[in-house]
Image 1 (tube, rainbow, N blue to C red):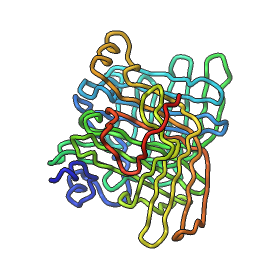
Image 2 (image 1 turned 180 degrees about the vertical axis):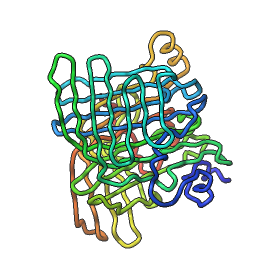
Image 3 (image 1 turned 60 degrees about the vertical axis):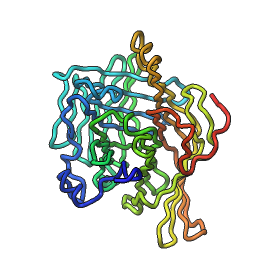
Image 4 (image 1 turned 120 degrees about the vertical axis):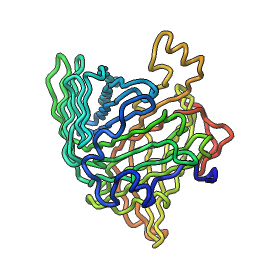
Length: 377
């Protein structure tokens, strides 16, 4: 296998057979637990929502912290609530393997009275931690989807796996949020749920990625662009779903080109950040789409070394742990062209992220990445 194919999307008939999957619709068991939870593996179920008051809610259930997949199960839940004009509220639930269960038949993940459960269409998520209680229901508007098998293989002999399943690409959300000392609020909005798993630390496979999802008018979008580590040829791995009125209209990753504009160095994470992330999707028949993520605000700017304290923090610094996670909000615009003529455009608020697992490769110049500009806070 050549260096150019050291990372590949599993999309061949043999891949489907190996994974026990059909080329047809996603099945409920695919959103159940897909790993054994032992050393080397990791898995998480993710939910986010953009709510009617401008708040952003993110809830993730983990089998273990993604920075330590070598360890045994160490289940946890992370909740982030961003409210307009207020500091981010972040809470964690930590538990033992004995307190954690996850079905293999469908999504039903439980930890310390909290749960994340559903059937590919309707989900309930409940988290109660310290001074915060979240009860959310997500009802799908776009059918469950995966890019081919949803699995990317790494290595000359497909030695390692990274998998991604957008179980609910877009759905309506009803969320009741209660904070200690305040009245419970019930808010509605638009949400998303996906499921990720793998068998080796992501930092060994992937250097960084952009990922985002949004509703823009009648369009629903999930877009991602992943860059493999140097050992895997710095392969570029796009992922794309564009749906209109609940019907998928574009999802061929080979037709995607990424363009990053107004790139600057983030002063805290020291990572290059693009103010404009553009996915250009060209059909062979003259139709093409442009999905534009325009950053207005950085919601979260977190260096991995800062997520641990004491001796672990000192060791992380000594070991040059350089990872960072940034989450952004802003405007997402979908443009549809017929040839060079713009025939449709729609915009709405959206949320997206930049994950850096590795070092910034100064000598690398990925397609679509312009020279980095100034350092900005």
